[in-house]
Length: 463
Image 1 (cartoon, one colour):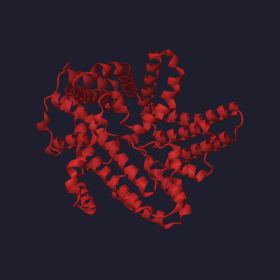
Image 2 (tube, one colour):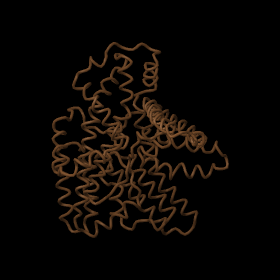
Image 3 (cartoon, helix red, strand yellow):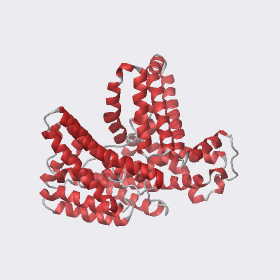
Image 4 (cartoon, one colour):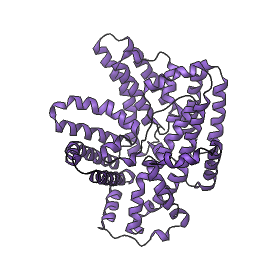
């Protein structure tokens, strides 16, 4: 059941109404039930796997809370993480070798489970006493397909709101606004960019170099529109049930260096890996100086790559970002010191050039992210460099309903991804007299008129 279908929203409307009608003490149980029902509609054969891993980790948390010796705590930590990490590796590896059907959401709920085990290991009082509350966290439907990855303490601290009952109409309106914004971003922008990118990717050798270059430059903004759109929908649905999820994007296209980019892009994943992989590794290698820092960064970003799948293209994607991050981290202080005493105009030029160069680095890395094989990625790079001949089809040879929307979608997506600079200033005189219902109605009308027939699948749903 996709987040972009009318059937889903009919189902969601019924679920939300029932959620606020039932007694408050049953609301957490209701979240668990509807999350499992939702999972049955998208990956029914693997619901048992998720519930078994949930039970194992819940019992591990109880054991960690009661353990007295450090040895028993360490053994429990391993016993809790091993089946979760083992399942994730087996299915990812199996999917890369023989196209096994991956359990939907396994990358996300596995990281949730590992977070819980580690957090309870660090602080046993974080263990949850109710398996219903714990299972509702792991299976939480809005975050199942593509995240974001919510930390356990953040989720459990909000369950008090469910037990108190009542209806927060402001939160519900915020949720609906996020859902509508996410649908507009995904279906009006992301899906139209996907039509163009997908068309060129079917046979890049047939197109001229400018068309291939434009398609390549669209990778990052298409992925942003698709993934950020999903995130907004997921956060909005969560708010309808009284749960605030973590932000996943913060104006990534305004980043002036690659370090800042990863503080703004897929934030729930990068902060997870920073806390549980990079920081422990960095602490253990701090005596090695720059070499230890480089090893910690590269290892973390290799994991970012293979988290998406056990393919050579994802490995190269992660390795490239590890190299970019290492070079940036080791030279940033020197660069900042050099520009510190320069005129304001020079510093502004540096920031602008930094934004452009960061986007180009991300675009280059995503050639590997998108490519079906290493050979296809190398061919695309050769084609862009003029090493291999380009085709004859130009932008005018592409159907107008695919090519013309690019001129609106590209600047809108980049503008939104840069944080919508100046939006509040120019919107203030307009937003004061246009009621919310009119804005929502205009958004729904735009969706009905402009959505594409081919769009609906979320890119990150495959991970």
